[in-house]
Length: 610
Ligand code: PEP
Ligand code: MG
Image 1 (cartoon, rainbow, N blue to C red):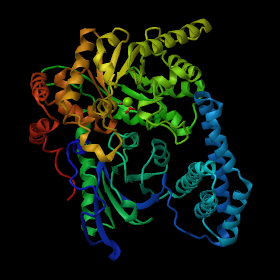
Image 2 (image 1 turned 90 degrees about the vertical axis):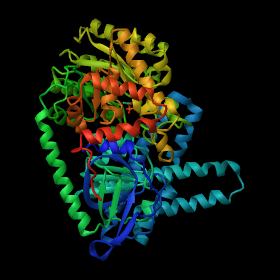
Image 3 (image 1 turned 180 degrees about the horizontal axis):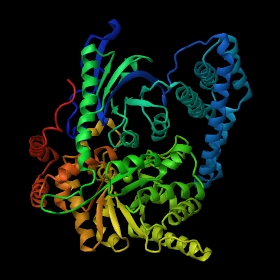
Image 4 (image 1 turned 135 degrees about the horizontal axis):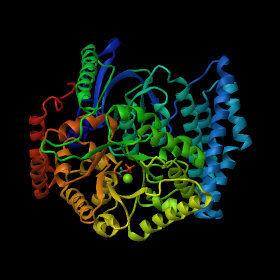
């Protein structure tokens, strides 16, 4: 338990691909242990599945004669899927970038359907019994070498397009293969994972994720946490060390990966899994108690959610509501925007299941790393066409979503939240748009909650500085520290190279949070925090003491956070918050906060495996 804390605070002293130790492991194979960033808690063991995604490295593998037809079928399905993706991107790009720039994707489609290439690939599978990935890679390479040799600059430029099409095709082939063969539960090893991959694989009994790149607040990591799937990210070079089918242990508390573990480590792993279950059982007694300090200060303790399937678990964990429902996963799962009716059914189901507890639906926050590889290319997507910006540019999508949420609000427990608010004009545009949609529904006689509350996410630094102005336009704020920290400190939340600079206790972060809370309270609105920091138990007393009204956390940490809140007096939390706000560096806060929390909660902050 309390794993997340370690992820944030424990500095990784070794994140190279050099194993920490090597010794004799299972089946006479050498055990190798690697350290990365602990991105999602939990321990599990199982067989490795190596998934090459972006940079496609394909080794030659052959099939048997009997497998030819199924291999060709797989290839055709991947071809179809790639074409569907490209058509969607083309439509999107045409709308946003104009016909001429969008044509690049028409070019991709033509390459994909090139009859000569297709025939050559199929012939390779049939004749040389090559696995489809290898056939695709080889035939595309042949094509590429012709382009490379040509003197025409324009043809040279097409190399990148060719590479993109090849990668898309191979990725779809592998996805298809993976989701078809993952029955027994596997630990996925990949260079990187997109949020869409993470979700997709999770449906196939995945036991863990290990990636070479990524940071702990990358969306893929967040999704692993909400799906309760352990993840270790930023283990460079691990793909060279692991083979498909190797037995591995993943320790998402400490960020360790054991390849071919020794019997001792396997036994420790089993023991640890049992211990974790025990602690969880003990915390169950807190379920129906308020999230209240020893001197009676009550805060809301809500959960973050991404999928409708999580709602039952969230209720079991005793959440006061859902403080952030990331609706964009409806899009990520299907790779297209769901219709109003499809959305309504999902939102309605969630609102009903949680009733009378509140559910905050955050409108689609597409963009940043939450895009399919299919979306329009942007040089700097995190600073680009994301969240509310995209929605205001896509009125049909925005309208359909708002209509669906409003229709689901009849029970009176639904709230709406806008992501990526950077200024008053944007916020007002979103609120005005919502008012227009409400008017439309009234006109049509469609009932909805006329008192529905609207909130703004505070996750862009400009919003912090003008929080007083924004507070007058909405009913609540929710601080999105995942983005706020990345924008405030100029540290990409998904970049492992600078992950040590991603600091939740940086004075600028703490002061920004305090400013937002004060602005909200001055304007008589409540303020929550729904970034991952809300679920970091080390941060709990500080946020509590700064006066946050609501914590919205990943469901699995909810009981621990409640336990911590219930162990402090508000007065003491205020003192700790003051002390933290006086610190000049993140390190200075850690120096006293870590030992304090370890002394106070020894049962949770014990080390996991050795
Ligand atoms: C955040 O930015 O803190 C947040 C909660 O939103 P997301 O992680 O989805 O960007
Ligand atoms: Mg955000």
